[in-house]
Length: 89
Image (tube, rainbow, N blue to C red; front, side):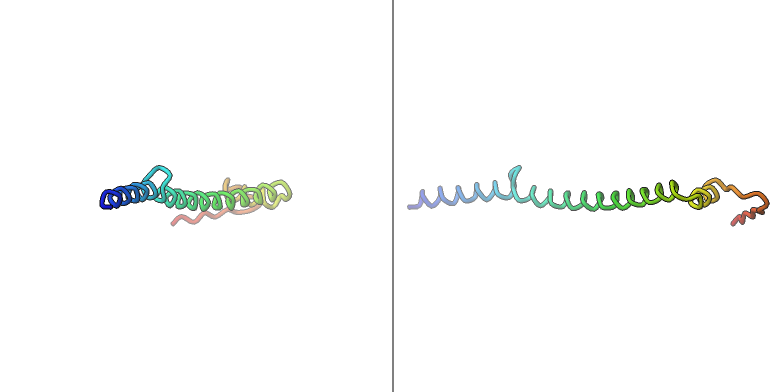
């Protein structure tokens, strides 16, 4: 009876080890779940950025106001007859 008990305990310990620490064990599953969640968050951020870029492209294609404001902001351009004041801090 005692050798059978030892064999059974050893089998349970081996199976528990495989369950928790093997390449396909629960530790790896938990780690992969956290990696998947982090990647999904990154994908959401990138999707939001892509949508804002699409909106910006559409506004640049449709209206001259977006082009004008972009030229003023990024290139410092002014219209004829305007006076440009630059405040240095």
